[in-house]
Length: 324
Image (tube, rainbow, N blue to C red):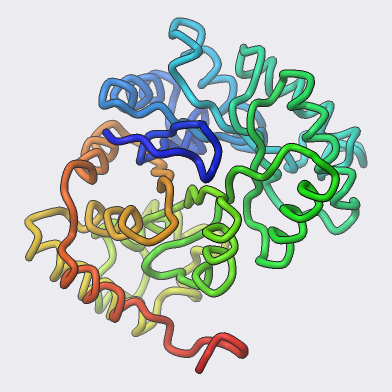
């Protein structure tokens, strides 16, 4: 597996990250450990979780696994924002909550430091200067090595970058956005900002909760039983069950046959070859699923295959001022 610098930082991460969202929830601890072993045996070093995944259980599972490994070999990323209690200060990006949350994450992970600590969501109730200055304090205290943000809009990301520069705080090293063949709006502002400012891009849900896994085909009128798409959320059937999606999936299947690869491998490989992308984060719920996704490394789509996917997945109509 290849390794890339996270943006303009010196931190090297594997070209695929492992998402631990299902650990301790949809994936039990035994299988979670097998997935972690398989990923690291294949050369993966970048593991992403969040305090809100399974109300902290994901961090706990990862922490127990980590205790018998050499800590320095792994890049552990987690996030802060999610509600972790019933009190008004048990959520968000206030200084109080971030300081409480980082210590709780460190306890669950069983480690002295977090390699990459990310603001999980924007918080309208808290000044951004408060959140970013607190992250800078954590870096200076040695509890955090690098900082990032997730799910920010273009202007929010640029504002965060500029504030860090103006105040001499630790710079933003990464953005974790939604970016897939079915979700390309990140190309309008987020990716250009990242390329211009030296921010790494670590995309989440590269198969869009199974839409690009090969389990969905034109002609279906409902998602497969047990699919995440049956649950409420941005991955819902109402959002994606349309002709544009079926057109993308048709072309994805055709390119996969042409390349002699599986549909998920091609979907993730497309991301790996997009300008500015550092590492897609794959959330494997089973070891079999991970084994297939590890087949993403060591080969490339041709320029012609990339173009076919680019054209098929181009959004039908970009809003102003992005068209023209």
